[in-house]
Image 1: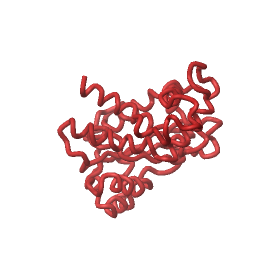
Image 2: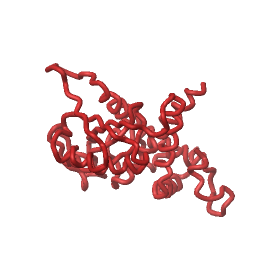
Image 3: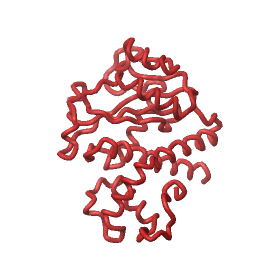
Image 4: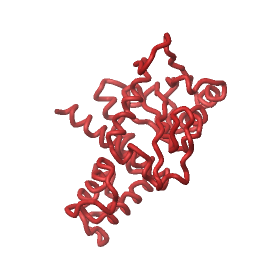
Length: 248
């Protein structure tokens, strides 16, 4: 990860702490969900890790890491570097006092908070991610996600699997505007409880993985951009681990 994180030379005058230790401090926060001021003393001061995190996010370092890691993992899995299909879904995070100013109420989940909209490929690797208030409709984000995915993949995606929350002409037209066809995966028959649906389970698994990073279990951030960046960081960590297992 060092080439993506080294925004300046390590021997620069302003670098008082090793880059690896600063990154370890950020990983500690996102994994444990701890408060910044309670960072252990064997790591750099929390102010150093926080300020460096802001620099990394401004430079879109984590997005670049996720993009390159996805290509590597797809090629090692025998797939083409760029996907032709994706899966869209969202999850609602409970608000906290820090995020309450931008929170909305999700009537379906009966929860006040923020909604994370994600697009992943058929292997579950993150393509694009967007954060809104929880009262925003999923179908209203199709155009934004489709545009982001096509920019990232070079207009390679032509199919998107979605659930019944994305039904409607507006969402279909928003996807078609970017050359993508929406395919709604429906339940074949009425059933109680959780039902594993074809294609759709991939993005649900990704959300479950993200929830294991305690900082992402709720919306603890004042800025939506910070919540977005930490999601990219979490997926980068997951993808690096998957890459390591590939060579193990």
